[in-house]
Every structure is written in C-alpha cells, then in structure tokens.
Length: 95
Figure 1: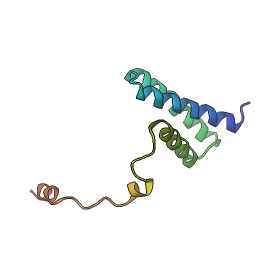
Figure 2: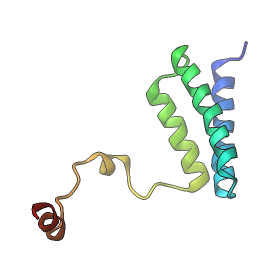
Figure 3: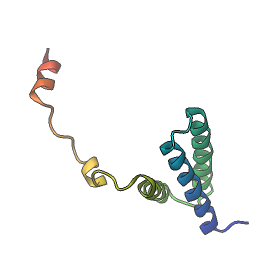
Figure 4: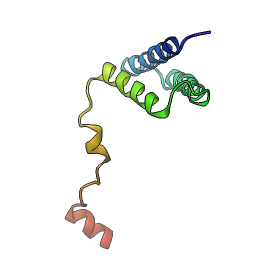
C-alpha cells in the first residue's frame, strides 16, 4: 500500500503533467481526459480521508504556480468584495 507521501507525490506529478500539456497546446480531448483522471483521483483522496479540501487546494495552487508562475494578485484580494460598478454599467442596468 502506498504511503500518503507517495499518493500526494503522484497527484503532484499528474497535475504537473496537465499544466505542461496545456501550456504545450495539447488537444482539448486529451486535456479533458487527463482532467477527468485527476478529478477522480482527488475525489477518491477526499472520500477516503487521505486529504482535506484545503490540502487539495493548496497542492493544486502550488503546482499551478510552479508551472505558470506566481498569481497576479493574492487570494485575499480576490475574495474581497468587488469594487462598485462604473457609472456606464450603472446607467445600463438602470435602463
């Protein structure tokens, strides 16, 4: 039986492969299949209690950053309340 470290290492490898394939312009069908495998793998890890949702999010984020570079803004900035709509959007909504 694989250890938790081995299982998470395999997940990281699978994610890395997907991000590299996407960057290389792999076809949609192959990417969709790979995403399906990884989604199923992560679901199994969640359902068996090997990892938590937060741990999975951390792993995916770190692998994405590893392949694509750092995010444009911190997660805290994304989760804040969005700025008010511009005056053009407000006029359009009022009409």
